[in-house]
Structures are given as C-alpha cells and as structure tokens.
Image 1 (cartoon, rainbow, N blue to C red):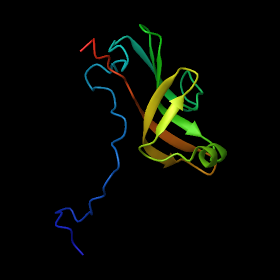
Image 2: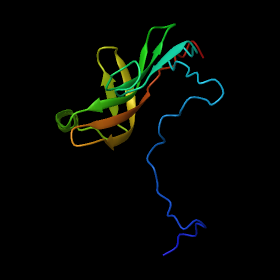
Image 3: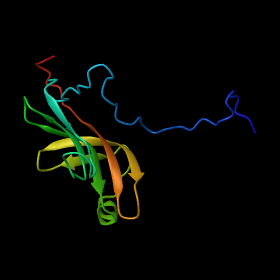
Length: 125
C-alpha cells in the first residue's frame, strides 16, 4: 500500500510540534514574558550542573521561570487527567501552560511538553 510518498514512508499526523530548539546561530532563547534574551536554559536529567526532573528557562531580567517539559508520576497522571490541548497550571508561580505533547518515558515517568499562555495587555498593544 503506497501513500504517494517517494520515500515509501507513511506520513504521520502530529498533534503539535515539539518545543523549538534554540537558534543555531546564537543559542539564545528569549523570555516569553518580557522578551529578554538574558535567560538561562536548564535541561532535565542527571547530566551537567543539574539533576532536575523538569526542563525550564529562567529569565534573569524579570526573574520568571518558564517550564518546557515537566515530569509526572503515574499517580499524578491518574489524578490530573492530562490531555493534549489541556491547561496545566503552575500554582506556585501563577502561570498557565498548554500541554502540547504527552510522552510516556518509562514505567514510572510521563513527560508533559508545555507552551506558556502569555496574556498580552490591550493597553500595551
């Protein structure tokens, strides 16, 4: 069965693209809240200077943390009923995110890929 693709691979629909990697030229990720380039990117995992479960961006100008990937346990997933397109709330920092992807990363971990919901003030526009 052919789908007309010359490579012979079928096309798979994706719900949302993954978070965009940093630009190849400068590697700077701007803060989604204040648009500053003065940020620090913390990767998840047990390599480098961090052993964090989550991946996030810290803005040195507005001091806000923006999560990109958060890790959840099976219990969290059962209680939270998370789905792609739902809102995930960071109650401690009073921010909201849209869940763009859910990835099962093992028997005891699920990763939620997030995109921040940034409100634009009508007076600023």
